[in-house]
Image (tube, rainbow, N blue to C red; front, side, top):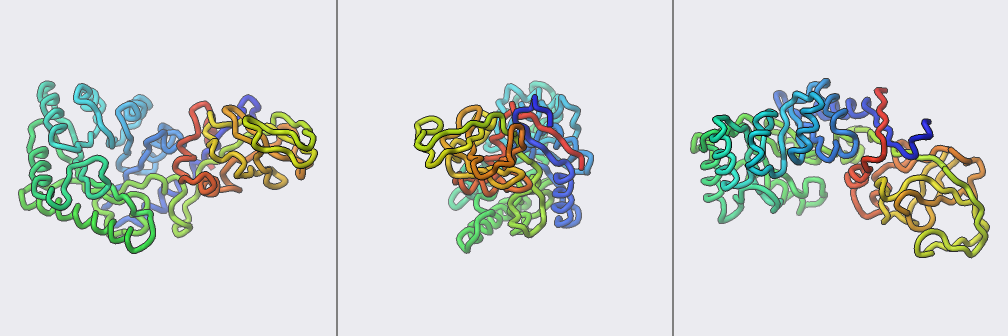
Length: 374
């Protein structure tokens, strides 16, 4: 351990490769693999993960915004990159220069992109986003909006200086169980296929149709069309143990200070926790500025070589306290696992009332990523 690294995230590239191969093995023949590397690859490091996916034979990458795409291009990543979010039309020249694919979510944005690409004498590659029930981004096509939505998509696809390579939608509850969730997801897919069918009748087809996110790859294989978009599944969560994907991040720290505190003394901000015995208290250099959610205060334990150490008092910005009274073998510089091999991020997420995606993405930039090939 390099003690200059007060807290660090150990990333297993071998596990990411393992997960990629498992997911790929489930895809129908000819179905392409788009790796979602937005939010710094869910905290795992977008550049390193993207380079690995490129080596493994992935077909596409997806990011949230232009800045994330620029980071990858600057690092030499050559794979096609889809921007899932909005990019102002003034940056069309950058999109074209960097060979990026832009999502188009409404006719008005298609007009702006076409106009700007035309001014440059260039063509912008786009993917159409269809809103089938997420009620976030995309051409509205549900219910009474169907005919107008299809017409608007057709109009966007017919604009000069745009290359409509793909069309996609996003499932809202494909990771939920129960009849209602299944009915809603199948309804979204049915609407998407009706939209693409209506466009086909107008002579408009796409080289890439994609719907399946992580959960749909597992639960709704019929939605794996020309391409799939696994995100959290690639990083080892979301399969419920059915596929054997492996978590890829261990968030680690060490004991920096140990002190003895008498009975009846408050610990940390607010004094909410009060010792009920003479306590051997450890201080570890990780806090909410590192991504350890403050909402976990007093609800969890962290893993030592000698067993779990309960977290005490409120989690601070840069550190928090753990009870080592019953763990005499834990000493200064002893390793502490926040989550990883011995305690799943899913466990901590449940205690915080959230999902592992948030825990992974919350690990801040000041936490160095240490990569292991094996």
